[in-house]
Image (cartoon, rainbow, N blue to C red):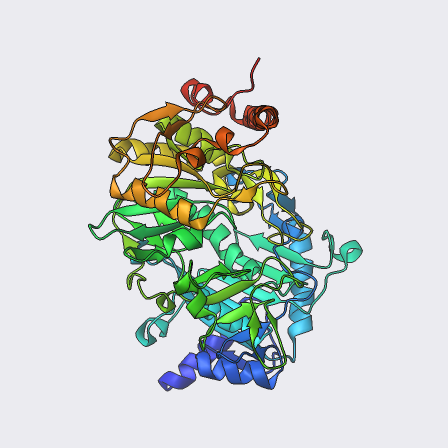
Length: 538
């Protein structure tokens, strides 16, 4: 019997969900557009409507990622490819299977929302992803964050990774073998993600990023926790950095075209965005300093996570009573200068961003290729308040590849790929500190966005090519003696401290931390990289 196209599509959809272990569901809402999702969200009272038209959603107790609740199935087919340890912790297949059955039982009879999407703007490396969510607002989040297929591309859509998100289902650690009631479980062999016990939408986004970071290196693509943009002359710049270091702010720059703000791939012929949207921090967002991002907070289609709103539906972006990690999720085309393709040429500059909570690193340093490798592997920054559960103020940390929580393979895999790409094009590399100056967190002040922008402009415009560089006495980094728009005292961090002895002691402590952290890589990188690093004084 020949089925009509619509009947065949419905049958195929039902089979697809049963293949993911989901049967007996209530109403399944497939690929709803923004207006229909708004109706569902408001009917179900999942979020509130702001005066500007954005949805304001609260995530409850978990307002950031839960790294201790993330596990990877230890399957023989993929086990040898995973960098097992504190970040990538194993979980047995039978534990995953048991939770999958319990989640499926929980969802039986309940309505779900399904979005068929792509991760990866370059069609050569695109990953079809199906996101199945319990709440309509999470379905809108997924639609915002990933690349939306055309109607033609949706016909016959076959996911190569599936995410099942049931935030209201809470695990029982004793029964289910989890760390807490929340869980983020990845099975690379079956290409399936289970998320429960947390409404923080970032877990959906980062689980797909982790999948891309696992799948792309064997295909010759370096996955990067970075933003990227394109200059008027077609030059591409990459900005590595963890949350809160300025990736979104510095890439959404007037006069340059935004490729993306958080996750990219570097292939043999392009830099391409993994996403179709942005997930920007909006706490104390300054409309003068960041007008493009600020404008998105008052638009229909934007989701605001944990932003405080009064009874008159007015937003208070300065209120951190719920969390420092307030977020806006919006399609990338809400940024006026966003690239319509999400693809740029091979890069000319790589900028590594760090938010130094100790206030001792220079605001700008030029790196040799060996130093670039060292700082990429080190991934020094500060965890910014609210980004992870339990973090209430910046804490110094080392997150290798500027994204250890999302890198399932050994850091040496990603570092070797970066080394080869830098060498092939003679890419210029820089370290930019967007953290503190004049003292550590609590004493000094955050380096102004205006100064950081001026430094980045000088890098990308070539204004520093003829400026003499002076070695920083504490860290051996090459620091420009001058930069347009930046006071000379700002360039040399020791000059910004009133207590020079305190600076020297703090710088020495930071150097010891660098040295202790890098010891883990001593046997996996060239001696030249080790020698180019930061070393404590004897």
